[in-house]
Amino acid sequence: MNFPQLRNIQLRSRKLRDQLIASPYAWPGGYPMFAITRDGAALCHQCCANEHKSIGFTYGADGWAIEALDVNWEDSSLHCDHCSDRIESAYADSGECS
Ligand SMILES: [Zn+2]
Image (cartoon, rainbow, N blue to C red; front, side, top):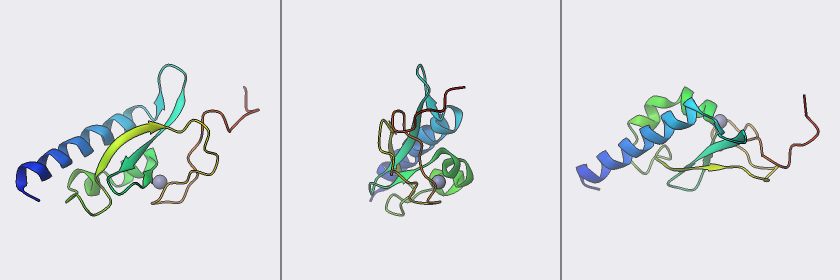
């Protein structure tokens, strides 16, 4: 991988990481967001905060390059691939109205 490519990957990872940390829930609606890495793993917003350096200085194939953010609509068995915590879903978690 050449330098400009890697640079772009790092910039995108940082941007998406910061976006997820700043707003882990999509607005409007409050839907839970998570990050998807280049190798297809899921990362929770907590890991994005804890591992912000690994993500910011990813070399692309180390599992820390964030490719996209997504809303977890209804996958009640989605877990973060780093800390193994369950990632909340928008519709599978019900009955918690306050
Ligand atoms: Zn996590």
